[in-house]
Image 1 (cartoon, one colour):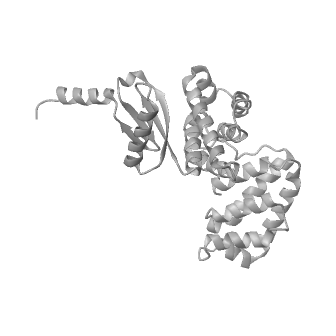
Image 2 (cartoon, rainbow, N blue to C red):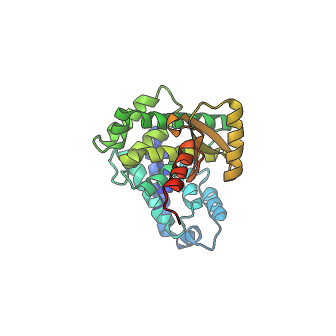
Image 3 (cartoon, rainbow, N blue to C red):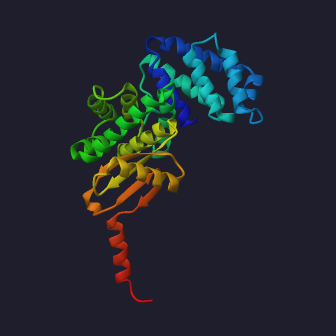
Length: 294
């Protein structure tokens, strides 16, 4: 099944509380409806039917008849483009809801490989961030970025969260203890979930993916800038404008001071690296000077 669908479902299921039994029952009834109707399956799994049309069919069929979280999950599954796998994806959501209802441990929860964990985390973030305004998104983005840098800069914490010495539940608990009183519920949930579903060694990568995901939700990109010196507000503004021109994205700077760069800066925007540091220029000059004459 699509990992994004299961991630989205996980977030919705977490919010259900005592309503999980009802939701699980309604999901099971929908699976039975799919299994018994060739026409409905043909429409919802047919590549010749546009995704928005399929999504609207699900909503028209279910709204007012089942809980709104159930409609949300089933609509998300169809709009994610699962196509011929829609019935399989819904069955996976049903299994997740039933496991939560029955207090069972799921075998598909983690740890997942980097790609699968990233997709599942993206679906989870989609549900968690739904309805957040620009101000809230900016707050969440900033909290996750600061937490990522805190983990990366603390050897003891980095070891605890990025090695397999501790069970996932313990690592998730550490994240919760560190953030619960210092961050928004959205940040806490997503940082904990990343620790639950991903491999320990991928935790920083997944946190960075979350930062980028929240920035995209706000129609921005994060530029992770490593600067040799403190930047003034005017310098930050001019640097952001220059990076935006080079990358084609509206960017928001996250600046970290690294004296080892000697001068200048290195900026990371997604997979793009802009290295304008003095250290890099010294390295290039050394290569030219030491290279054998042509």
